[in-house]
Amino acid sequence: MESNRITEELLYEIALSRLEGVGSVHFKNLVTYFGSAREVFRMPRNKLLKVSGIGEQFIKGLNGKEQALREAEKIMEQSAKAGIRILYLRSPEYPAALKEAYDAPPVLYCKGSGTLQPDKTLAIVGTRDATDYGKSVVEELVQALKGIQIISGLAYGIDITAHRAALNSQLSTVGVMATGHNTVYPLAHKKTAEEILEKGGLLVSEQPLFTKLHPQFFVARNRIIAGLSEVTLVVESGIRGGSMVTAEYANNYNKEVFAVPGDLHRKYSKGPNKLIFTNKAHLFTDAETLAEWMRWDEQPPKKKVTAPDLSAYSDEEKRVLEMLIKKEEVIIDDLAWHTGISLNRLSYILIDLEFREIIKQSPGKKFSLKNHL
Image 1: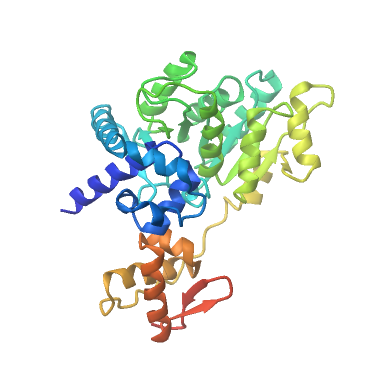
Image 2: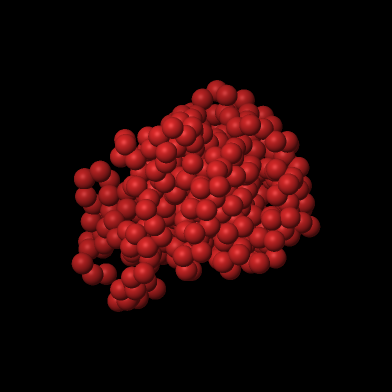
């Protein structure tokens, strides 16, 4: 029964993501407001227009919802045959690091046996016209790291050097694709992509199978690379290179960014040098300093986990309380998003829990548990 519910939820999540005029941010706003993708499809025009950013273009796009559902069903069938896992934002397997991004992809298509919930992650990005120096920096860095997942975009130059260095060092690596899984771009890296899968890595895309490649997908891919990673390292890049876009996303997501300084006379030193000069990246010197800054070598303190008795609460109340136990303090929009409860319904639940002195509210519509349950 639970499996059927998840399958149906996935169907509507995919369908909503395929509607014209629904980007990542609008998708998240809609599902947060109404509680689920299925509810969005059921809502009348006047209620939909109450959601921030939703206008007539989306209402017009809803005329194609039946076609979108058929397309979603086909995507699910094709993906299952190809061995592709589909993760949607509310599924437990969806990477937590990426879920926090304001423009997180509504749906991810994943192939491979690796995990998207690793303890330590590093994105390595840079120009396609990498120098021998840039490649050697990547190879030496990766070789010196232990237990780190390396994330990049399968492109020429720095990206593919990072993937191959990870494979050579027996590190998990994730290739984030701008295409559907039926196509590896560039084709010259197909063998490396296959090796990533063979050695327990992952290939990830927000595009379903047989999607026609579009230039804007490369920029969209860059935000996934930044969102999946704890820290992004820019090795070589021009001032306006794709790696600079990835660094900008990482900064917007409040992630750490490092950059390799370079020769002032080299074209592809300009990007990293600018990041360092404008305080948008730390200066990279060596693997040891990076690991020390990220505290990767420290043993995490053991948390004392108390398991309060939630049996006296309703299912919806349990979801709210479990989120507050996990996050300590959460704004109402995030509570709605993570619990799957519509904002209207959630407001009543929070007021009731507050009157019962189980939770407390702070300025900014932030909620947390009282000292005890």
